[in-house]
Image 1 (tube, rainbow, N blue to C red):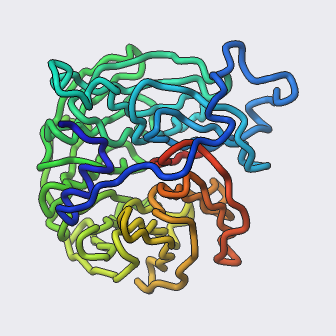
Image 2: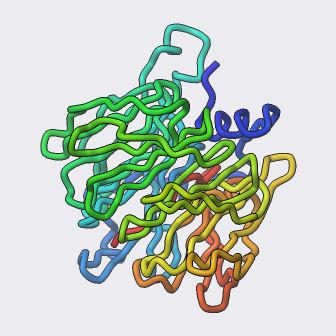
Length: 356
């Protein structure tokens, strides 16, 4: 029986975790996506209005106003949304979807997953693209040419050409590819292989795996500094963040909280924020803030239960964290190192992304 990607993560990590949603959906979850753009009261220009989005495994995407931290839209889908990513120009929202039928016991077991592309202003679906089995994360290249999707059960990555919204390449990776980031120059993708102890380095010019970097037990997601020199990787089974010198391959491990999931590098490359999820039975509820120069944890910030996805605002002032087992997002003030607001979103929020 196919599971959602977070169940796959947990089974790999402890061989006994069974994750599920906990709280009921918020009232916004019952609304349908706006068919003709935003309501009149919320109409703003793209230049003045910024949003962040959460992928809710309960079957929706929440759209939140970044200034007010209010949910202003909900996109309903048939299946589990595992990850979301906003394009570099802010116009497109990409999402990975494991279709609802894929969880059945019949012929739907062979149903492939899809990548969904939406207009960030109107919430309208632009395109649905079939990818591989159990798609995990989606990331856009900075040059706007491609969107890449990791196919967790196929051990490969689908490369989607954004001019045609078609899969033009499928690149083999290590076992169980999951979270990843792409270098700022759009040349390399660094894919965490959850089924082994490595990160696959994909060359996006040759469309091939160039090498693997051994990092540690159950790597979940990666981050890369803007100069492409420092790679960070969450090690779920080691409760650690691996900091990798890309040139030399040297790996240093920094202890963090229990069951780290996603990591995000701040816009100025100073900090890495690690969301500590734990398990459904014993959830963690913190974010570890690591100074990448000193390689030390400088703050441990309290969040909701099951901290999973993490992203910063473009100016680095705020950190947004999805809390899977509370169905919320914690809004953290980076200077105060504390959560200043909690936002109710959809069921089992996983990935999170913000407009540039």
